[in-house]
Amino acid sequence: MSMQNHFGSRERAERGWPVKVRAAVVVVGFLGISGALLFTEHRAHVLGLLVWLPLLACPLMHFFMHGSHGHHHDRPDDRGARP
Image (cartoon, rainbow, N blue to C red):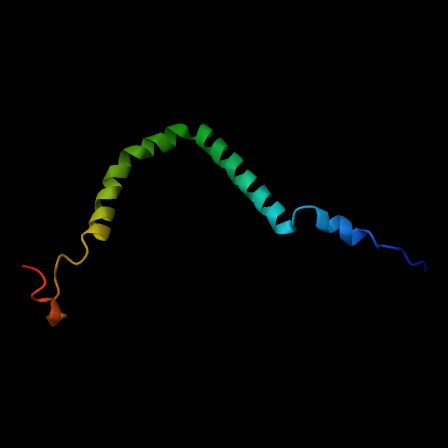
């Protein structure tokens, strides 16, 4: 068997971008291209769903923005805080 000299192989591998960065670039590129194609091919469906966004926003805003409606029955120290 012959021994091969791989002295320069490590130096060549360290010059480029790391594998994770290259994989991230590929994934972002794939998602961008697929998103653009999905939007162009299904534009009528997507724009048709935009009509329903305000109707969906109403219950979500009610749930997240109203909070507890000022009901503080379990905390006696907050009784004098609100007029």
